[in-house]
Length: 170
Image (cartoon, rainbow, N blue to C red; front, side, top):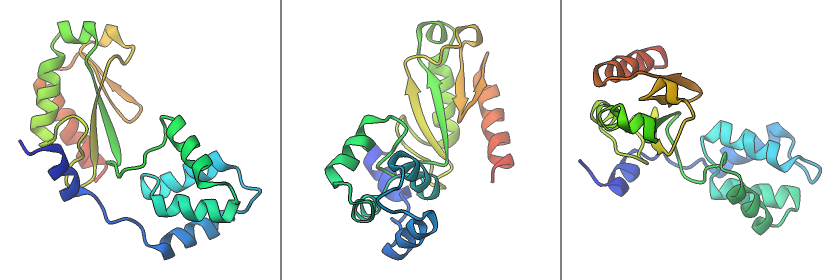
């Protein structure tokens, strides 16, 4: 398969323009009195990540030093500074899942979507992550798509789930 950087570069969306950033921040009414975390969440909801240019403009409008904004962004795991797929697939690699075939599940996801851990699909629909544990050992092997759990997986079931999810969210 292709290397991660090539896939990321090939599928990464163009960053938002200054006009798009200004329009969003205008619509949010960003000012020095704005709630920083709430605005960061709104910006990420709009663009799918926090573009550096948006953080710079946010700093200017809120009068919060850019270093402080980056401190907040880097502290919270919910914030992303690189483009991501619209839907995140998390494949569990915990002990119970491992014993019950998590490797085959991950292989099926990678094969179906033609991506590796940390990559996103070319259509920007899916981002793949492996995680140490989903806390659903009774469902092993398990994965999540966004906030929805899928358990007792087989490679065939993974393929069916991904194709159904893609059809429903296209």
